Length: 363
Image (cartoon, rainbow, N blue to C red; front, top):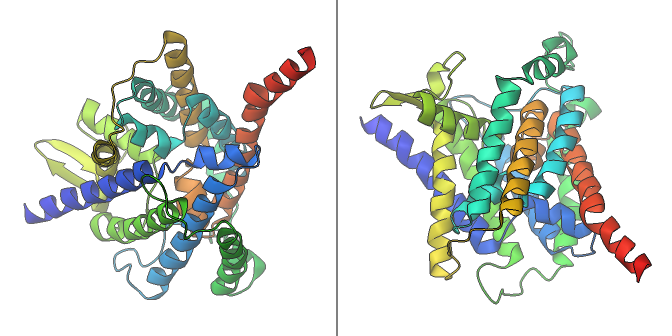
């Protein structure tokens, strides 16, 4: 029972801490990518700082041997079709939904009904892709023969450093140095009028992400870190069917049963993210029940569904790929993240930029 309690408490603590920081810093990867097109670099600086902190911290605990169960960070296999197409679809979906995978979850804690529907849409998209009508497409894209491996036995997951044939820390230094230069140009020590400054938010997101790598290794046997595609699916499957791995084999090291429900460690922090956001929002007096118009609710549900389809095909979301995966230097996540950004920019152009240009021409 003690081990069960630690399993539960650790997942809830990571999720609540993450939700608290996200809400307090208004941290959203969708906003970070989108606002670049409008020459606002505040949130992209926060995002890049979080990436640099996670990259250094996660690889450091790996090399120090602090991942005692798995021994190494989980790095996702490179499946080009899936990473490219899924990433692009996901990038378009987050614009329609008004938030990324983590963004819609923390905003649930602020009381906005639209984001409850966005999360439901996200799960819907994941399930119809993993188990439903889109499963044939998904199975074809992620088939083992389409994965790319390297090494003498062709069984090594491609990373930036093993593809280039250089020391991992050389790549980290080359990536982190310009990030820190860019961050310093944004006046990171300036205090926020309310909540966290963008720099504090980025730093703390990185710290929580590193803690999640250690905790996921310790409590579930795999240094999976933070992600939301698989964990959201696991959370709802646990709620609906009593088993986070409904329709599949239960990974022994990642399973925990309580009151007849078999759930994953990662599904617990999904539950706690809105709770942490709610606590932060209450302190800042930013929690208020909001019921948007029906057309807005329909749009965010559709956006969430598109997000879910893209995330399931692509193997991850903005946190799973754009933060956690990118920090492990896995090629799959760098490619997926690039196409998440392209999908985001494409949808922003058609949804926001082109209509504004057409209005200017009409005037």
